[in-house]
Amino acid sequence: MANPSPRRNGLRRRVALLAGLLALAIGSLNPLRGLQSVAIPVPLNTAASVLSLTSEQAKHGPTTQLQGVVTLRNGVGLVIQDSTAGIWINFPQSGQFTLGDEVEVHGKVGPGQYSPEIWATSAKKIGHRALPPPKHVSFRQLSSGDEDAQYVTVEGVVRSIQLPINTNPRARTWFKLAMKDGIVDVALRDTSGLATGLLLDAEVRINAVALSSKNRDRQLTSVVLDMADLSQMTVLKPTDEDPFSKPLVPVGALMQYRSGTNSYHRVRVAGVVTYYDPGKRLILQDGEKAILVMTDPVIPIELGDRIEVSGFPALEASGPFLEDAVLRFTSHGSPPLPTKTQVADILSGASRYRLVTVQGHIVRSVEEPWGVELLVQGNTGLLPVELQKSPKSSEVLNLREGTEVGVTGIGMVDVEGRWDYTPSWLHCKLLLRSVNDLEVLELPSWWTTSHVVYLAGLLILVLVCLVMYNQIARWKLQVVLRERERMARDVHDSMAQSFAGIGFQLQAIVKAIPEGMPILSQEVALARELVRHSHKEARQSFAPTDPDACQEIDLLSSLETSAHQMIDGGAIAITVSSIGSPRTAVQSAGSPNIHTSSVFANSSTLGQSSVSARTGGVPSD
Image (cartoon, rainbow, N blue to C red):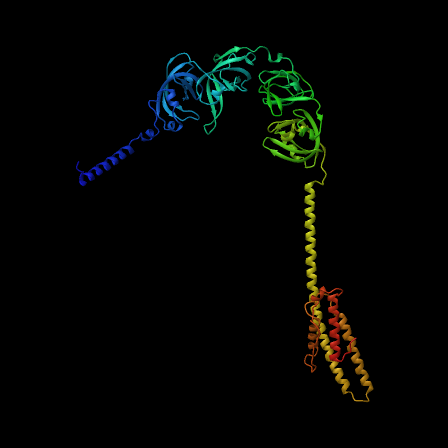
């Protein structure tokens, strides 16, 4: 076979290139190119086909049309179910439909907050028929989130019923349903004909739509069964008896060995209310034992009232408590007297839920968003004390550190991990019921830690100021003394020179007096004595007052300088000689038994007087 010519090969390459460019241009003009990239299955005409989309596919908003039966409706939308699955429809006009209506929906698919949903542009009723058979599911299936918007049926025991606390039409009654493998919440919209006494602890079957609670990251947080009315509930086994007809069990006997109590059946206990947070929890004390009760119903009770409680025992690391409890008032009374105890007993967990009182002094008080926390120092430890926020809780913050107080409250115990007879993982505190549980016994002494620190700081500051003041005064005095010594030396040298000059003149006069004039010689001798005496007085007057004034020059140099000043202009020659190395007063300071400053000053004065006497003819003393 002959090879193709080069011209033919070039033509083929040009045709292929043009075909590629044309395909690219057509692809860029195709408006459905983005949808084709996510491969959305068509047609979307069943609930299952819409639910099969990923969130990325649902974001592109493909249109859909489907039919189904209404299984749930509320003010913002409805749930319809066809033969394949159920799906949520966003449609604000859902109030025009009722359960069992068959509707046709047109709209766009959206990713939803958890699972894909439909934003309806139109919805119309095309008939009415019975609800589809619900799917029987377990708690494990519900907790996976895969049953979102599906019509399901479950069985379990009604553990608690919480009625609406207001008249809002959208308010619902909540049931807590204990299934075999878990507990799920059930919401009831229409409460017509509800008899809570007959449903509590009854075994029931519920048909409802499973809805998923989710967070902002599209993650499942819990599952709620949304039930339209009581027609979707069937009582399989009514409650055997009134929950308060069960025999009373001592609080201290709960969950003990062979006590006959467990977490699956209610128990009935009685005692005195020592703490009450309406709609949340209360503390019931029975003699020396007490227990925490978690309850939703709100009844008008006060501290000290005696009540009966019927609830399910629940286990935690520090011991059992009652949950899903119902309450019954029996009589009024006074709160029991608190048991006096020590901080160490509370910190050991021995006062769990009991009403106790302890003394100590306040170490610290801190305001928290939930209330006030105190640290109270007792003889045997440091105890955290909490007071829930109230109009008067901030008054506790006015108590100063060191205030001796008596605190009365409930001993609370939190345990990390397991509590195997050792308090190593205990976190204990005292819970105050009101401001009245804190009594001031003695105001703190002024000598608190903070005051001592402030006073010590003030004394140190004053001491530093005094030291600085004395040092500055000493510096000023030294400056003045040095200046005085300098002036004294200058005046002394000038007077010594003057006396030396007078001495020279008197000596010349003595030599010039002719013999035979004893009176004149006596007068000149008297004049010389007066000069000597005056020189002595002047020397004593200008004795140095500052020992440090002459410390920077040696004694021999000082005398040499003075001698030259005295004979300035005369014919006398000054010769200085010494043995050894001359030292100043500063250099001699290390010699033992020598007061260098005073020795130097006195020696200098004596030397100057001697030089003056020798050069001026004035005898020295």
